[in-house]
Length: 86
Image (cartoon, rainbow, N blue to C red):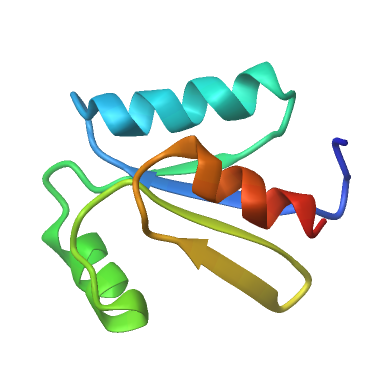
């Protein structure tokens, strides 16, 4: 399933069990991802708020090229649904 053109970005914070669950899931599926740690970076939370209207993590951005979809709901099942499109 790993696709070189697929880009995955995980917005997370230290000590977040949901964030760890998401990163473990992606690692198990051999899906490379970029991690953006918002711990102590309120400016990064402001970016999430501006883009998606949320300030919680994890937020997972999945896409190719300029087309991205954000998963803001908790639970890997939401990530799986988006990944199936790619």
